[in-house]
Length: 385
Image 1 (tube, rainbow, N blue to C red):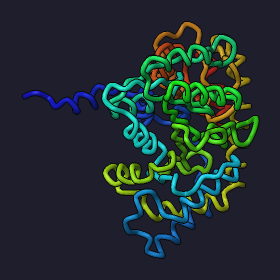
Image 2 (tube, rainbow, N blue to C red):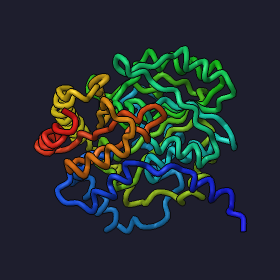
Image 3 (cartoon, rainbow, N blue to C red):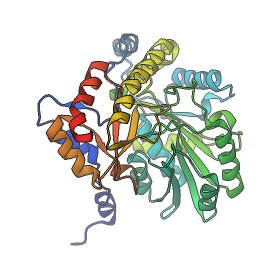
């Protein structure tokens, strides 16, 4: 019996090394988990209480496919205030997670075989979502020789050859790189010239250590630009387990994303949306706290890594939750991460999953309690020193 092609398509997705590390760690004691992009701060109480109140108010029925009106209006207001834009709520689609928003975007954009240019290193779920939507990923690596940098000429050359979309995450997961406003302006012009869609990941936009918010394409984009912007409540508001995000689409696409949402998930849980609404209304102090928590973690971890003889840190991250560093002599990041976990009890994400050419790198998530991070650095010293 022939295996269905779609099953082959799914089974051809690579296994993520960080998932393997997490599974190994689950069988161990006294592990410091630095592999996933998650802080140790719980969701603020006022957000939890808003969801509880919504449950008590029987907000348990099917939601509108693009999200409840109060939340969509609050998201539009939040973005307009933050970026000085003039977005109507009709351009907002609420989704059960930023990852779901990403999947909807690529499903809406791609025909089988369409090429998507992706800046690397990149979170491995992105090439996976492109693959499941029928597309092909074309990686454009950033240069780590003297800090992370992007060759815009090389990027434009890549976009000339029948490319459907470009994906950029800034601040970046895994290296904390942030694209400047001027670079974003140039990228938008390149996309316009070659009629390429831009999928912009703004999930870490509030976790920038140099400006708040980080520069964002949405601030410079015109109404007629081919751009979809992805965001999530997971990181800045400590809501990873809530599974709620949103996307901003061009005018006139509301019905398309409602239709996709209908068949993908039939909407986002209503009481969860009321928690997200509270996050936007009263959450600025929580976002400030999260950003400070991340900065403290970065400032503990980076000096320690820079002192290890085997480690090369291209630059200290300027945003997000991670540091992406190279280890001298390491050629198999997955095997090295397994060995590191077993010997030190510290779990890191293998760099090989973040794009071709990064198997000599590891990713460390630093948004944890300072004492835990200091202990992790002490444990790693014999292996990386």
